[in-house]
Length: 402
Ligand SMILES: Cc1ncc(COP(=O)(O)O)c(C=O)c1O
Image (tube, rainbow, N blue to C red; front, side, top):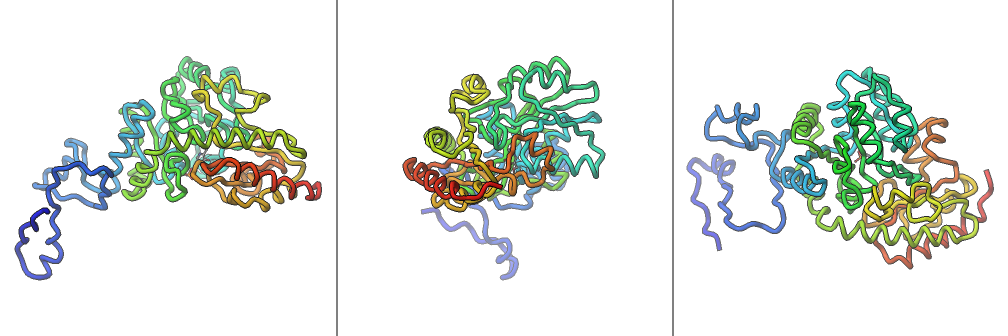
């Protein structure tokens, strides 16, 4: 047993405020401690200035960083084989920081196969903050070469597009960007570092919504960025100056989630492959989009870009919006909920949820039809998941055609 620390001096109220001193701990706890400190004391006032200007290492204020997020940054940098990583209050804040740091005074070239929230962010920045944003279908090196102009300074892509699961040819695209002197940001949320480590393919910064696979339990909203120390230093300033830092409890949840990331992603991929096959063999399904399917247009990239695994998200095409909604409404194991990449299997109709911000043309460009349904396959028993989607298909078959 640790001895009770010596009493702090002073009166009753002073001791009430200052009396809980931190005991010296010699052992290493298995779980990273949650440091809920908004501010940190120093021995001299000069030290505060040194800490604030990064002249000395250490902690000074919770918005800048804290030990719990340092632990998260270390594990994310390690999994992405990066010099450094930083966290943000959401994946959206991480994307904003990465693009703002890299765009300088140039234009952003962004894929049309884009998550709706990122589309809304860029639309706002274009409208209200004067960002130059151009959208094009950017799956291959040729697509990027054809769309790039001298005005572009940064390209933004998603490793696996949401919800059609198209895969971008990252190594070839990174080479085009490198030759053109343009930075490349990749949103790796759907792949996670288990399937893809974009920095090793020549990408400038990788961003992820840690709300999804990294956190993995549907209990935290967070984002991460990984890359060179120099760029992450600039990302860090961006995030804390805009007040978009991740709190210590959220950093802890993501750090804990990451411990089981490889197991969860492996199981999700295996389950998704079985569910995709069952749907593809079922009557009434017009198409199944999943990299495990033999007819997936970028199946040749599964080995080179996705380490041989197809991901845990798939989409299916039903004949009408009514059929898609009937399918989702009939699910009992798949939960009707947005988000993805967690323990629970989820079902959404993207046209009315995740991609609702897109106008008709942008929705078509993202590969969305009225009858598209997206499934994020979790880690439940695969037989229960297959039975659920087959039951839901029975309900969808009786729905009217639009
Ligand atoms: C591919 C992708 N990127 C980014 C985000 C945004 O993440 P967050 O909700 O953590 O801001 C999402 C959210 O669904 C996403 O699916």
